[in-house]
Image 1: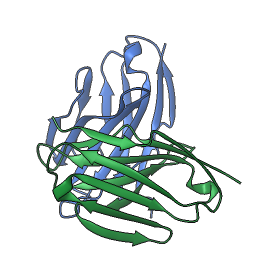
Image 2: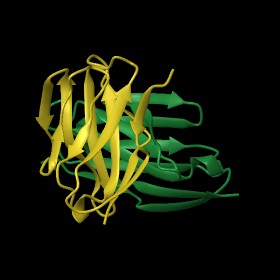
Image 3: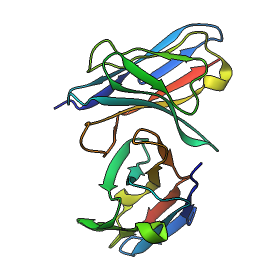
Image 4: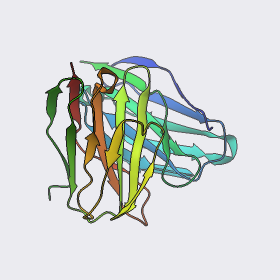
Length: 109
Length: 112
């Protein structure tokens, strides 16, 4: 089945710093999403981005489907950005969303 | 707008007991999903449903039963709970046309 790899596994930042999270996938996809799991466990959908670039405030994402990767950019990080960021792709149909292992981000004041 | 809710939020039960986790969404989304999240395994799909009375297995369906008699509800039943089913369970939903997935707050289940 499709493999989803995220890097780095862990990231520590000072408030105000910028960061880039990467998601590589082993096969072509038609559905890629980024999620943030906050320290209280809630999973929030950040982007549905099978290709191209999208921006939402300080966050933006780019997916280059032909090269099988996606990037999540966080600018001017805040302590509320802390948590785990997951990339997820669809394999074998529109219903089986496969998650990467996540990038754990800690933003310190 | 309540969105998607799960109950209970926390549950402790004993091995062999039947447990039902509830999921309710107010968006009229056609698709609903159950995931479990475990350290070392990430998020894994248990079951999903494309519409009322239509369900299908995900990656880890053994030991679980689902039903969907109404569009807004998607209960997950552990017929005879085992310790390996100790986990955090997330319900999720999406529209039939939009592929973005939205999660409920989760249920933390402990099986003693």
